[in-house]
Image (cartoon, rainbow, N blue to C red; front, side, top):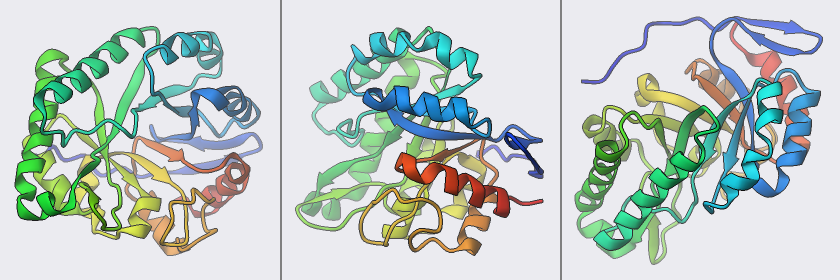
Length: 274
């Protein structure tokens, strides 16, 4: 059975140094290892930001990230980890699947110097004609993938993210709400990450998952390309943004080019539910 969150009201107080929340919603930005210095400087300069989501590809990235441990602590930032785009929970070759599971567990062990709030995982790709013939097979691959992780590493905080697909020989699983309903009904310990930019390209009624939403990735685009624009710089309307904010996630991540962060924070201030 799905766990239902109680109704919570987000109250926003605008202060000179930023956005002060009266609940546990944290405002963050996204970064990769190579531009982490710049990202942390943005966090330092803007007290509205108290969360960072860091994309990691290689295990040795953990050693690089460890050098920033004190800086992250001093800025009072919570941390999420975005796992590699190449990681594929749909994988049907057991040897490769086991290596991905080993990778996730090893990565978590190597990041034990941080209190990781979640590991975010896109669902990724399948050959299109195979997916059309038997989608349930690949959804079950995903269910089994996360069940195996749970058996080996209990209480690992995982979110799965909606994506988009444009057809062709390869298609992404996770571009419609029905995929997530199936997976989350089978894996009750997993949460959902709603990506507004991906939803603009492949729209679906993700509000049906509101009780499972832990993270929101906020960005904008032209409805065709994942451009990672600032809020209201593309197809996203103000009424869409307000509906997203009413989802009341634990984390809102501005997943966009750094030059859009300040203006997007101002848009958030204006549109947050009173």
